[in-house]
Length: 245
Image (cartoon, rainbow, N blue to C red; front, side, top):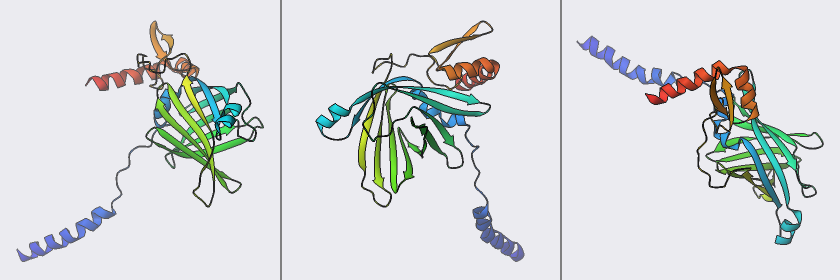
């Protein structure tokens, strides 16, 4: 009896260390399409108004307008968001101006990388995380930290701003901000759209397969559905069946 008691005490002393050393179970890595789901509201065309920082006179004199189109892109299992900018007026002198971009998920760090291309074909890469409805992205160049902050306020409204700070200091200097409203939709419009069968966002375009109609949110999703219709129909049906349980 004493021998069994001793064995039990030894086992009880060792088990906590064995358990502590065991690796914690890890959740499966997100697919690029799943990781970018929080940005589904951005799909579409946006009318944007930008204003430089400064006095009321400087803001009035330097404001500009632009159009921003955002859509999904797919290649095999990879997925990302494509951005196309069209300026209606030159940006203030000295401020960055973009013509296109790509937003991707980085699985190794579980954050996002936004690559923006300037008219001079410079590729500027900003990286950072999404905190609820705010995406804070930074890049370091010339002893300064360049920051872009996107705030997703509403399905039909978002803002983004550009600021800098010395790499060794915390003082931030704002340069400009842009307010964006989705084209063709009222600001307080309700969510009455069907679901995009590819991305899960708002379906705005009809597509057909074998006599049935489905919906997608952009031309990128439409092309992807046309290439692999049965794959997305099966995924959609499986998701509906899971929700019904």
